Length: 488
Image 1: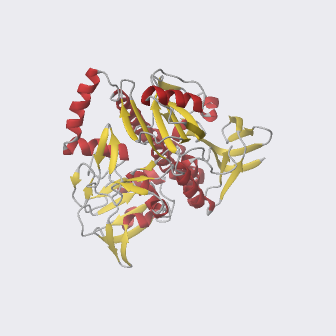
Image 2 (image 1 turned 90 degrees about the vertical axis):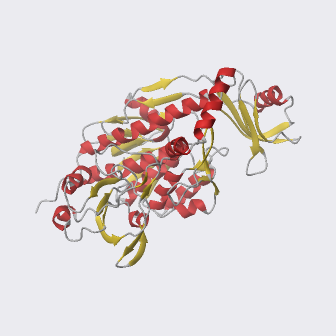
């Protein structure tokens, strides 16, 4: 029986991100993946949002994705929302299909000590006070201190753990296909009494088709004949559709795990939440789940932090996903074509043309509006740290370049000498950098904020403590997030 600190079930974007985070922290991690490689049928998800690009930037790999993607200056909720004025180095949505995202992430993970058990599936597991025994389909087993389900909406890990998956049943369904056409199709969007439809170009030159179905269907994968019939209903012709490389169906089913943790079993990504793909938030949400969980799980396994630190994973990430479920449900409702819905459409379009509503909604969709509840205080507390330009003794640096190793960071911007005593018991757990910053501190939606004397930044890039010239509260923040002080 092979033994690991952590076994991750599912090697998609969420599983890959979590494996990378754990490996950077020196944790023995393995992925169980049913695919032989990272090949993905069809294009799947098609974009990376600003906060996800920042997460990749924090690990030094953002440029890998940017080199292959296409930046667009908009996010999307009901209408295109301009984000080009957002205070981030990544004030755009990066158009890049999931098959490329996974390939790039896999190349990052391949350089780290991560074990893959490919072409294997989990048949079940049992946990005790010391760990989890994982049975593999076809024979064999693994043993781990913790098991994390990143295995999608039909998660065997979630089901076996007995975690409720509550929410809302589907009310609408869509067909999606990539296929050749003998006739020139009607490119672009079309709106009718059924809903919104679109035909665009896939990377291989085929047509990428998304059609709202006249009646809800939750049957299995559809056929190209069904897509042809739906095209004929909407466009009056099937454009001679043939040779489909991918045909699928999705619905507006919206569900969320009641708990993200059941003792030594945790959930992330689609295993923890499913929703319609409006706004392109699903893949991004999963990657950010992993960034939140990875460093916490690593500390618990190393014994530097108590097991209770894992409870903060659900406390922080569950509300974020719940909000995504709500905005995607609203997005679906706004696609209705009856007269009352169209009237609401007109009003909302007017509101979203105003600066404050636009910025608030866009920040929610792209992940820059997240604030974890870490108490009252400076506006930075609980928010992601901006990637400021710093001047250090070693020369100019960006904040995110200091997070590449996924370690906590104490950024000292003026409290020189004042913090030494407070951080001494944690000196081997964090990186301290003395620097100055002359530029403005600006947060999405909130605008400019007062520059602090120091900030404590978690490995996931969120601010855990803000200094105002002294060290008040710093020791408490260090103990909360990075475990009790080392004994003298």
